Image 1 (spheres, one colour):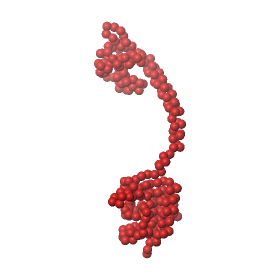
Image 2: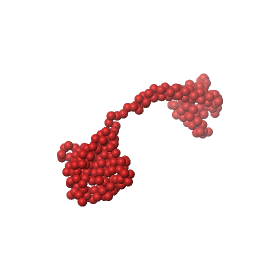
Image 3: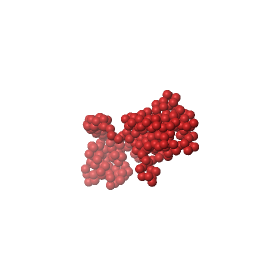
Image 4: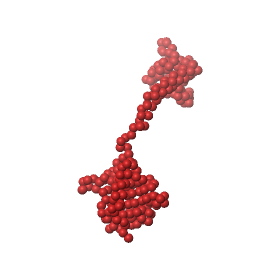
Length: 268
């Protein structure tokens, strides 16, 4: 007769292995079995059945019957299940005690860790152009009151930068400020001038300077995105820094305003 899969699963849930469950369910079907007989009836490998029977005997779920050929009998199901439940409760109690002890040990460590901060966790180093462009878009979206930019090629945003235009619109509607300083080279670039015009229509104030120290964007005197060009003249590699640090952002904002005051307005 095929063993009941549901009964096997229930016994496994009570702590038996699948082989142990199959052998016990076979043993309950008659007075006793030899190891070879129960292996065939339970469909358990012969080389494994002795270990399985020993495990059932140790759990007091099976009883060995001495004789010329050793045989085994099942303990009554009611008693066997009571013993399994007792073992499960004891196991749960041990786990509960271990869990309580572990929680008591780890809670102070976790609490202390909440006050620890990485001294550089406010700086994100970006080298991938796509990641830099994504951060540029993010800082434009996050600006709530003020957006200040040093704009010089190469530009990381798409030429149209529709997200930037919308950010300027949003800022100006909310009574905020958007200012940008471009290099004089932009005056000879029709595409850049078209972009300046579009941003100007959105409400951005633009000025021009002979040189700019770096590409820079400062939002709300708290967020900064700036590039750190490779000092080797023969390479165009660059590293960008995304920084959330009001003190540094405030200093860079003052630097921007100094350059802004020395720059000329957009020529008509």
